[in-house]
Length: 295
Image: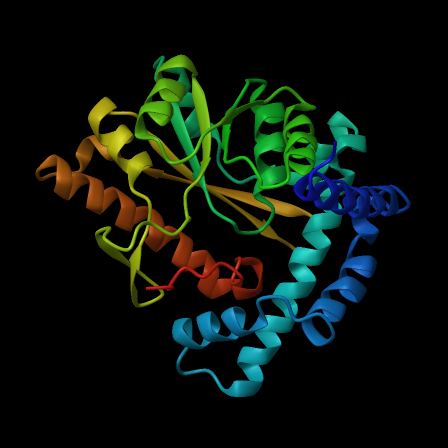
């Protein structure tokens, strides 16, 4: 017998499948049209988490006018609605076309690290299109990236997303926030991809993001410091022509000084400083729906 949860999950997955089907009616460069419509609908009519979005943008940009804050918020909804269509349609993309959709500005330093035989952590954020960025990077490097992912509440949607992520050769590793699981993934794989801007615990040590003391999960930095694993931060930035450019920056873990705790904090701060640089330049491309300053 189906439980209430099962019925709700199936209804959600049915709606989800409708959007996947709609995405197949468009090509990559035209997702901006349904994204514009859906984004405005969520901003004006179905304002999910709108209060959180406006609160976060105000905290990040206290010098901005109310009009500008609302403009960034609306553009954020449009960006993420468009991103959803891009993710929904990703499984139907051609491998060679993905190289066209996402290009990277400097992979040579990363390639040199791989030639040294080192495992590498790719650290990204809920910015631009991190899902497409991971797929494209795996294709362009011609290597499997183990993508660490937290299971979604709806197991049907979660399974679809995992299959989508693995379509072009990457491998999903499901985990919560266990440092043990993260360490195991680093040791077992040449390249591990992590979205690292999730809110940390209330008791967690703070670093600064957008001028605000911010608790961020620091397990990735801890593993990198203790295993001396290089970190490359990758931010995929959407361009006016709908394509993305992936910017690659290394955090040189080996050169960080201090105790282990100090090194972990410095590495985490370096990551958040890089994210802030891109969020300030393209604020509509970061996930302001996340209640990062809950406490």
